[in-house]
Image (cartoon, rainbow, N blue to C red; front, side, top):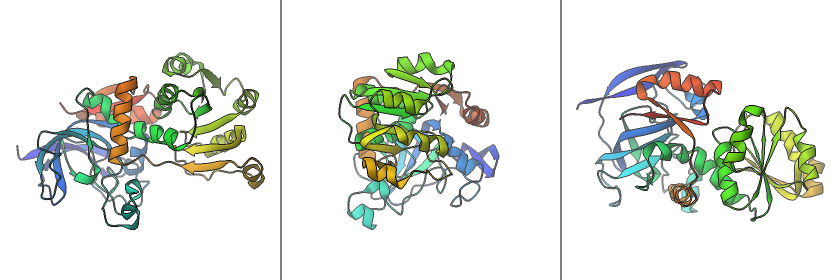
Length: 338
């Protein structure tokens, strides 16, 4: 084979199937033969031309699982040809910047954003930095692993960083691709889980996914209901509606923490007196390092946490993307290349 198929963004708003020449990996890089790639709402940034750091043409997709086909120089020996690996939004740290020198690899200032500043996984092949690669356990299928490389690590790490203890009340705002995994992780970690969503159509799903309580905002005032329950020690918001997220902050317990996983365009609003009076904290959580992603995969296997996925072939990437953006998926969409 001299070429491979890729679904590229030729210009903002235009996805088309093309053939590209297979590249050679450079120093510290590998060439992947992709088996699966999840579609994330964040893909819209590159696809719709909303990101300043994206040049075109560009292949989107940052929940990538595949096998190593070839290696450049300087790649660690545990990453062998034939090894099944994954790569998420963070495309591999540089090992040189101030953040890397402090071991904060997920905050590296010089790493590519897969699918935005670097070609991603809506393709049969892809070049990836070795420092961004995650080893995929044999017991986890590629289709199951793909969403955990973004939605999984984002919510798992937010819960870990929240400082919550088993038995604490945790509210998950937004029951979609991120929220449905957050519910499962929170339940398996021993928290009292309150789901905050909208509509009867997800009520049964929410209970099956692990919520002890479902607050349907079309029927009840979530803030008042959480206050009746003694407030939430941690609230994890997975939505991009900053106004709705800001309102829920009022339901935090004293010294509670508001974890932001969904990145909306508008600013959050909170009265300084509310922060000072209850000593509450607002904190963002950006996915995680490859090591942390591997811990997420291990925990998912041990506790039987899985994303609920639909699959579609690479050639139907545009249709799959449109379904994700319209909300017509429960709960994650994965492209397959086999």
